[in-house]
Image (cartoon, rainbow over all chains, first blue to last red):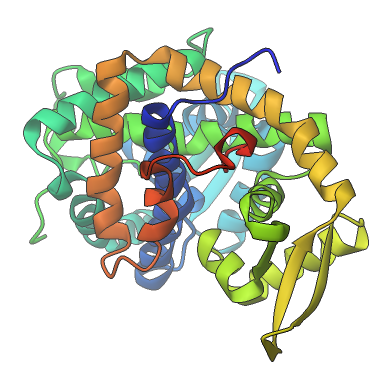
Length: 176
Length: 176
């Protein structure tokens, strides 16, 4: 083959990343299902809405922020709507566009899920690392995301927390 | 809440890890489906068998090596068996146990998938990082996996490549 296989050192790093990719989503998902009855992706959708002005986003923008295709997002939002956590309505500025808004019940769900989610993220990732490793992980993540998202189309999603906190910062509940 | 939310620096690292968790599996999966008609998990199962002596493993061992539950693995192996890529038979040493063996067609599938898989792993991860970052990623991965796998039950899977290469090392095709 033209591309050489990984050397031992590269393989060591790759295998560990594969292990994290395999195991971490299940751990996050289990906590969210247990505490709030939502999947990790559903929580991500609710959390993005919870941080938006008026807890409302256009569906196209919500799809971008959650790295989802519009059909996949529509499917999930339909399910969340049936459970009373989200509502959809035509965008007042552009009647052809659709907005999604977090309901009070949806907000309560995010609030219920958030403490356990933070604890899970801390226990399994952040608290396992030194401050130096936290910074290294951010740099490594940036480098990989530049390859995964070469046009930078979703870069705004993962750089949004790099800005100084706005007036609503204390309400932020994260987006894992 | 008792657990403080992440500070800006921690959030920066976490959001990037979430981005990688969201995007990388789809990229790996797309290549494997395109080149060999298998999902990432199916490839992982075939690759583990391809590296085993006689390309054969007990189902319980294969489950451990692929971080899968036995029911999930059985389901996937049934599908691979129907496509002629794997065959199951009673373990000669313990008739109550079942072995899975890679067929010639399964071996050919691994061989067909591997070059593109390696190229994908290199392009999206390894080549994006400096040698120093590769080592940092391995250390960070180790630290996170110690939390995700506190009893070390799957540690053998991700430390196996740390050993000096055996006589079959040149045949290894990876396990991503």
